[in-house]
Length: 350
Image 1 (spheres, rainbow, N blue to C red):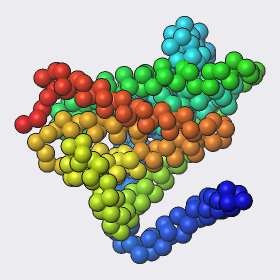
Image 2: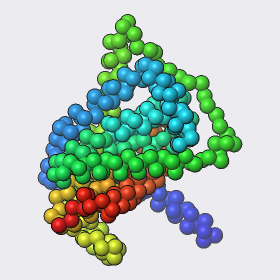
Image 3: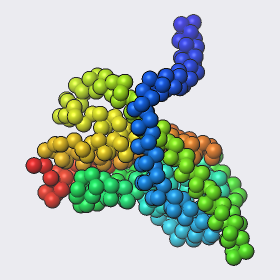
Image 4: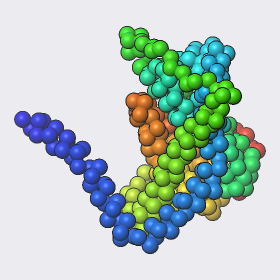
């Protein structure tokens, strides 16, 4: 009887928690309207100056490529690598390569397209989503390495450990639902878009731009939303409360409290968190680099919700993505620590 009451209470709590959070968000929007306006402006500028020019061309390019046979040829050529290594068909290499080249959330968009076109099964897409949605080299080398840490070699180090960690996660996830798949393995008839010709070139380009623009505008909304959320958490002192609660745990591992707000900010929204971490004056720059490696691998809740908005239409579970990104962050930080510890060139502590 007691367990059934507890279960009933738990179910009712789950039902009200999201509406409660939305109500709190609306109230805080009103209370901190001045600072929220500035945060929204910064979010719009970030999207307009960084996200839009870097992602829109890649989204258009991937949409255009979906009207060609390139995915089919990549699948045939790389199947003997992708299948034994990651237990996915060769077509998954397209998501893997484009996810590395163009950054969040391109990999998720391509995996969703593979599922909608029945090129990969649901289980294969869940394996792919765990390791193909990554931070791009333009952001890691250009923004983090060169602009924020003032050392391009650090950017290359972070990119190397980022890619190595994502491959490691892919190998781990080759066993995702392995037994279930053996029992019920179904591949549907592959759908395909009309192939591009000179006759339909205008329509293909138009549809590609329309689809890419819808996705990048949605991402812009998330960037603005989470810029405002970060501002509200900061102004309401919730970050300070969280830091005071968790500082003994981090201090036990020798991590200074000055890093904690940057870590929590990065867990929510990657770019703002990375900027905060890199702005901390510290003699142990190795700690900064390792934390950046973790945040780049994890990606943040903002990116996670972007992925959910893309994959939910394809009915791909978000669970493997969450587990995969957490593993990605931990493994990337570990690989970065190993390289910094064993190669004096990257040990930049002063």
